[in-house]
Length: 399
Image 1: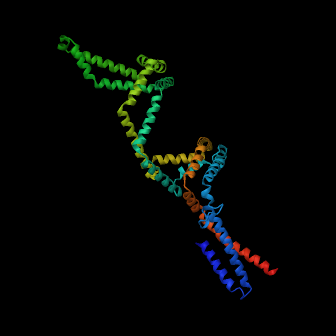
Image 2 (image 1 turned 90 degrees about the vertical axis):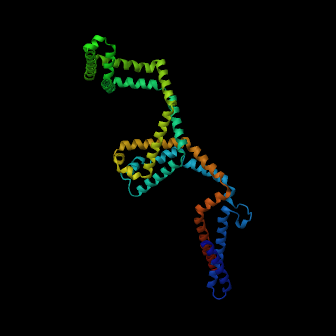
Image 3 (image 1 turned 135 degrees about the horizontal axis):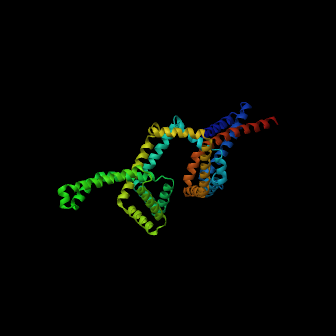
């Protein structure tokens, strides 16, 4: 409206000054300014309009440039992104100047102020994404992916190597201690069964004399002493036998085909159990609910013990140069890898998206993005044209 109003004003000034031109020589300068301003304004209006459409709907050659060259613009923009942003060497060079670790450290150490608004915005976005996703389908996909990885993984050798390593480093002793304590509790809970068994298998004389009760007490006391001795003596012969059995079990898990097949069959049977599927979906839903709570109220998370841990991590990231360098190197390599692996895909996505737009959509979006500056071109053309016209008139008068 301003550019067009200025053009209309110049037309009015031109008509008025032309009518009163003979009154005073100075009016000639006004007339020359207005006349040249109209020419400049109209020329720039034509140039600006010709970018997006045919001026006055006339099929003038080399007008409506953007709609006619939509596909070429898409290819050019894609090539621009690829050559200036998504080349691994360019990404690596730009990432050299980005200190991701210390930026993250500052945010974690002091997540208040404007960064608090950023955190809240990210939280709302994360919550909206989690709620928008099909939870049943997403949970099923995650369950299938996990089950597929577990089915493809032969766990028997892994368990065997883990047990073998634990025994080599004496980390299996707590396991044996736990088994001994469990045996003591089982014996204590089942003393009545031992007494009943001895009573049933004793003769009438032993029952009449009460020797069956004495025998049962002796058996129970002997078992209790044996378990206590195993718990107190690390070198007890029965513990040595148990360790020998564990070592053999570790070897069988790694090298015995029959034992490995049995473990795999048990694993597959467990994965096929519907109860495990229900348990996994329950865990998934609990995790999703926890993520939603955190996303909706990130400040509550940062006020607890977890928040203290995060702030300590932020301070460490800022103070530990070696850790910061490691994280920055990892981030740089990740960004370069992403550019290498997905750069062409991103370029095709941008190019194909613009190609898929119709001409009106491309024109409208570009015009909305740069239209304000283009209108200032019209205003500048009007003013500059007027000044040039006045200068030419001055030269004409002086010469």
